[in-house]
Length: 240
Length: 204
Image 1 (cartoon, chains in turn cyan, blue):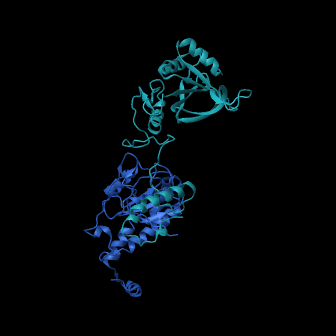
Image 2 (cartoon, one colour):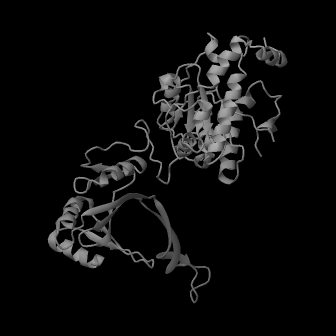
Image 3 (cartoon, one colour):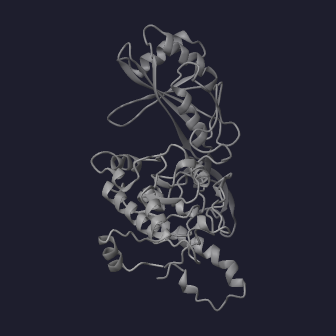
């Protein structure tokens, strides 16, 4: 079994200019993955498939991952000039003094969408090799090159990722929604997906469902409250 | 107009057969309920088992599963109704000829079941079409489906040919077609048919 490092070296030798990065997996399985840049992905993938040494002839699985925007708070030491009364100087006067202050800085790491491919070699009895591709962001630049022309087994799985995550695979022969209907506009597997509010009837609600049901009931009874039907007991549908 | 049971037996002993049109009509209908041949999920496997030799739904006159809605009397909604499938189920129901009946089989078909909180599963087919018999279970055993079938037969037997509560197919004003939900940008529109399914009031 070739290690990811060996495969990476082989790709770099064969595909000049291929930008690759090994993403380590700290778990006991140690299944490290290889991140490839989208612009050289097809070249790298066709090398992996056609190379006699590697011969990754079987694409077993394609899946998507959503990485939302992340806010990171870090403590940074900042040099600052502060006006301050200094020992030894005349009392009552202040001097400008350089001082190191610890400050919490917040920055937002932009999110992205990721497609993960699991390759096997039936011929060499090797695998899996985990390939990852990342989009630029989660909103407008969500294109990735499709690997369906190389492995037909990616066709439906890339369609599913397009459906549920919203990654657009350029070069896919038939990119339509797979599970949801064509008129659907959302991508349900994204972390910020808002489910349709159909919590009007939950006879045995608890936890999250209970909260959503109460919110639904409150929104439903609001127009009623302003109307003439004020005599109705309010606790009948409160669903406490 | 019902015939006295004792008199009927007495006349039968004399070789005279007495019945009413209503009784004869309902007897014929309840013993030849042909289900539509379609299944949606794992409940369909139990439905198939019910029709095979061990449980033998043919004993109740339902041996002929029709692969066309035009020839079917009964729709057994066996399994999870996804929001993608729901318009097709309603459309198939609309295409069935009167008189038509619906058995909602299993937790998913009656309420959404384990997938109730999913974004893609309809919370019960009774939101769009009138259901005659609900069977709980995940999946219900074949005995439960037979029980539901017998319940439906009792219901058919109790229907009168005239009067206010006569079945829909004998009432010229009653409509047998139900609006097919539209697959919208976020959800099915409308989310339910208020004529069939008014939002139940929970009293606690």
